[in-house]
Every structure is written in C-alpha cells, then in structure tokens.
Amino acid sequence: PGVVLAEGLDVDELLEALAEAEEEGEDDEDDGDDELPRFWPGAKVYVIHADGVQVSQAFEFDDGSPTHLEWAPDDRHLAVLHQEEGRLQLDLVDTTRPGDGWRILEGAPLFWAWQPGTGRLAARVLGRSEGARPQLHLGDPLAGESMQAVAEAGAFYAPCWHPSGSTLL
Image 1 (cartoon, helix red, strand yellow):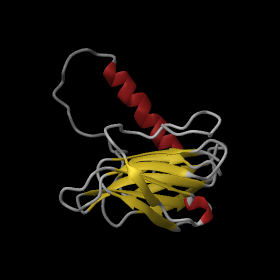
Image 2 (tube, rainbow, N blue to C red; image 1 turned 90 degrees about the horizontal axis):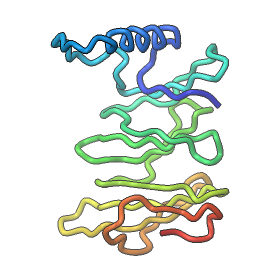
Image 3 (cartoon, one colour; image 1 turned 180 degrees about the vertical axis):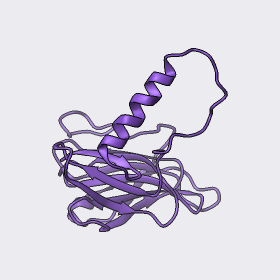
Image 4 (cartoon, rainbow, N blue to C red; image 1 turned 30 degrees about the horizontal axis):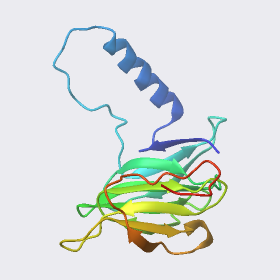
C-alpha cells in the first residue's frame, strides 16, 4: 500500500530533512544542537503510496502520538500503538477510510502479534486495576471480533506465533 509516516509533510520535505540530518551527522563534533527535527511524530498518521504522489491522512489522534505502527495482515488496516491519558492504547485504523478506527486494547505494557495467514491477534496486556496480572488476549479484530482475555500471560512479553500459525508461545 505505501509508506506510513507519523505527522504529515510531503515526501520531498522528508527526504530533504533526512539528507540534511545525515550530512550534519557526518561531523563528529557535538555542536550542542539537541533540538528535535521538525518532522518529529505528532498526532496524525499519513499513508504515502509507493508512487510518492498519493498521500492520505489515515488517522488523527485527539491526544498522544503514535509510538508504533504495524500493517495488519489484510494490507488495509494499521495497528497503531499510542499513549493517551497516561495509558498505552492499541487502535486499528482503516487506511482506506480516513478517520475510521477503533480501540482494540489498552494497558501497559502492551505487546501483540498477528497469527500468520489470518486476522487473529494475540496480545499481552496489563490492565488498569491495582494488583492486575498480565493477561493474554485473543481475537480477530479485522472480522469485528473483540479481544478476549483467555489466560494469565506470565513473565513473557510479546506473543510469538509459529510461522505456520498453528501454535502460540
């Protein structure tokens, strides 16, 4: 589908800014300039198609910036992890219908993996309640199925599917 950028600007501006940053990085001296680049991620997600011409805003966040973006197996949706109100939130965003997205899970920490060849998602998440234990959640959000806690997650972090999709660690 294309390249995903957090915070919008055109492709030429991005390439120019990256080239400038690379040139500046060639000199080993610390010039004390620790400012963030002007294309630092903000509260919008843009999809830039491989042709470099088509650009669309997939989603805009009321609060918080995306910290991790990942294509869903259907090549149409994005899993977007962002922080809002002090909590990590995982949203599924439809890149073909701007602004169309929904919350899958929230908690911290939050890790997930797509089951190969399907739209099923496994996620490890720690809920909000005091004394909560990490839970393993399963569901198929691409089919409109909500995520269900199925077991305590233990000490592992990110779920890991076997490449065949037959088993989950």
